[in-house]
Image (cartoon, rainbow, N blue to C red):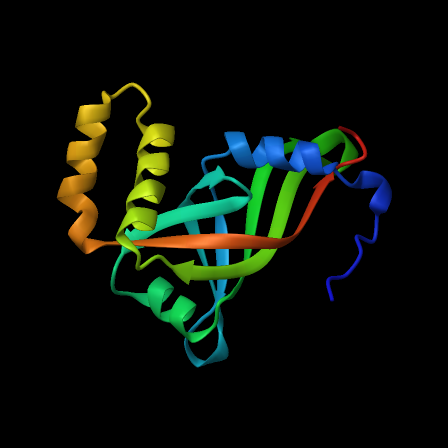
Length: 158
């Protein structure tokens, strides 16, 4: 179903890919957009228990696309160092394929928001993070991306 990596000698291990998912803060989410056009949007995320979680507005292009078609792709660029003397780059990236859904269940949505606030505001107290979730919860859409296929790749130079 998923294509094998053409340059398998440049593949990252599953552990390396997971390490990138744990430390990265953003990537590009690709969905089936309006009128059949691809819709790729940069988003912040958190990785936990083999899934990614995103948040955003309840209305708009992203939730409409997810409701239309749950298939999605997500790309993280972990390194990108231009090497002009060699006409290349030293890169490291991860690409995920899977299904995405909007969390409607209040406990699941709340738990995902807690993961996001812990990742992006670890210096804040639990009380402050909970208050922020309470404030933003009513107008926030939370999405869960279940990974079906993951590949990572690095340049030969590094």
